[in-house]
Image 1 (tube, rainbow, N blue to C red):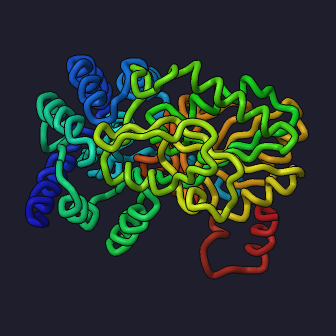
Image 2: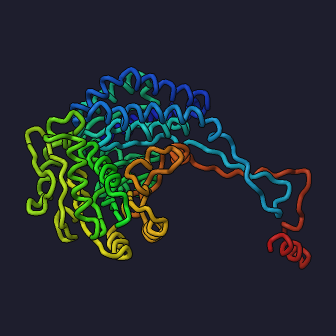
Image 3: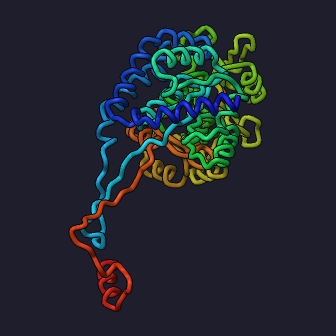
Length: 458
């Protein structure tokens, strides 16, 4: 496998060295080609997402296919501006000079995707890689084999394999890829695998972006609009059967409104998915038996107040709320990444903030409140990748906001211009005039030279 990857990389390097990918018109043409490819394969991708994850038509289009089409349009509209050489200010000491920043592609980038949004989280970084002028190798998740097969067929039909290629497979293939001398690695997945990727990249000093996860808290203060909060929390938590890296992992609710929130969540889940969510066309499935068994092990039947039913054969787990949860419970020891929502309580906002800060920095944080002071206290006192006030998840749909983690929840960011910047090296150039020469800069230095220097450099 290692030899195959080396050959693949050599072919990409040869193609990149021709310089074609750096041409702006070429990049725009390739983005247009990717859009045509997604449009042609839309039905197959939607069917594959249904088969692998049980995604509804609305979720599959909104969070994957349509999301990508919209993103391509945004990039095509803005790419010329992003790609321009940027002129920046030059200090007085460098009179007669111009300072410029060139956005230069890295070369060949590796994009390793996860199973939860198996089309979007491969194609969205690919859009950034193409826009910046790179070649790319994409590795879809082996846990969504139907989607992986469709992506492979699509990319091979529409793109030169020396420009963009796909490698399918599992651990052996992924290991060979992350240990290869790529110019950049973009990985989305778990914290544990992210550590392995970073360790492998470090041996070759390959730069990385790691989009990971963590236990993203949702703080509900006593002044929150409880009905709206319940709807927006349930929507963000239970879409894709909870398999969303920025889904609310747990709720920290003020004790005064705890019972009211749990009651509202129960009603909301029924309104969303009916008496039996297993029959709802809008509710997904757990990706595989391994993840299903892990999720079942986190359930505490005595603390389940909503849902709790499951069926291993169909990989169905009902939207579930657990109340009276403590930090010692199994469900609070790891990122849940499934349709289980624990509820913990607090009496003082500072205590809620302290509870969040006692644990690794999360990828997302949400706070529901009608008070600016509460909002500012939570946002200003906690460290997290990104988040929302009075909503969940939607911050990552704004292409003007960077999306990424901090600490153990990730390194680097992307979306919109941040994707272009992530896949571009910012090359600094100073262009100096030869029409005059500042002689005081050169030895031998005199007292006068130092006086002149002091005037320039105060």
